[in-house]
Length: 532
Image (cartoon, rainbow, N blue to C red; front, side):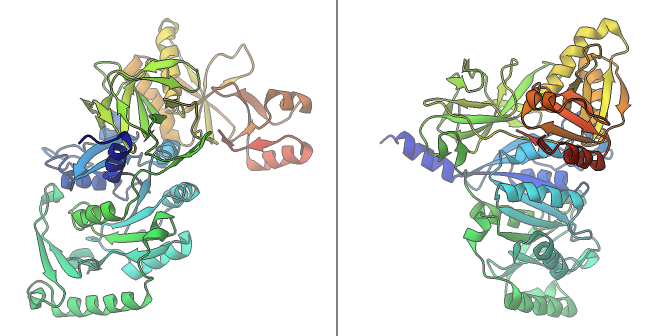
């Protein structure tokens, strides 16, 4: 008996899990990503971030600059099957200069995994990204990493999360020792000790010894003092920890906490198994037609990322689309909400970092790659049936500004093409002077590394050498009511007026004091640090 479309969607949605990882640089995000892929069977040997000799390079970093520096600069999508589930892992940049790319990726995620360094605890970038998750009420799963190195106590880390983020914590497992004495974790779900063996660089799945609570064999593996300390701490935990509350987890009010070491694979498979049980399946999303359930029969989706030249041989441009409702089918013709045009979605791809695989269909929660011949922009909605648009993805206030100059006039066309494509994919915000005699684009970024990536990609992908001329402004504000409101105010001092890629007026200030001064002089002028 064939399934109805609603039954087919319900079955597909129940087996899908989608998440992004948020962390401070160097907390081990890329390493954890690799190990999740290893345990998910998507790769057979995990690579180290800083490759030595014959060690593999990491799968999730594809840009050459990422491999050179050992950091994630771009967002990629990694899809794999595990225990009869279909998982979409939205890998985000690991460097704070690329937080805006992370914001966009979180718009497509149903769950977030917060990765914390056991020695450092909560760090600035983690806090910043947590606020974005909080705005979207995303369930947050915490993985305390690097337990095999000297670090803070488990209770201290749990206390910090509760006090600083206002999240209740529920330790799903608890560490047995730490640093050189880290022996594994106690799984509170199964009431069993999971003990691990260290293997070279954690490149393969680790053998695991599971001993139920109360089994005397535990004394063969853990010395008496460590065993006694672990028992005492577990008893304290039972007394002070709140009860497990799945509804509070789904509302982003309680975080399940897991302890382990991504580098040596301690606790990774336990985390993955629990995550599948506790995480939200694809969720309803707000649109101009109201909140749409993923089982809504008509196909809809939105573009949350664009990327040019992932495959340098083919000079491709890929739109990353989150499927929100209905069933996607290869070669279907859909409506493009912004332009009102019809678009045929041919050559859809399953994405795996730089790797591709053609697909015939996809369901809510999945992320697909579509060839982008200049049609799509970030935030675009595509749909079948009644016209609708999903909430836009905001632009955030940049802090560094530089003219991007092309010293070689013979490369004008390549320069223009490169700037246009990097602007479309949101690698950096691009603005322009309102003085028609100044033609150079203004790069507007959160951090210096964004400028370096633009120059690197202009050279490697478009064969154009560029120079930067810094502009001495540090704050940007969009004029909420547009050009007309700006004209009414008249001449402004200590301010530079520019326009963004969508021709909206933006004011550049040297500092926050100048912003407040202008607001005091012209309270009728509404300014915003975010533009939708």
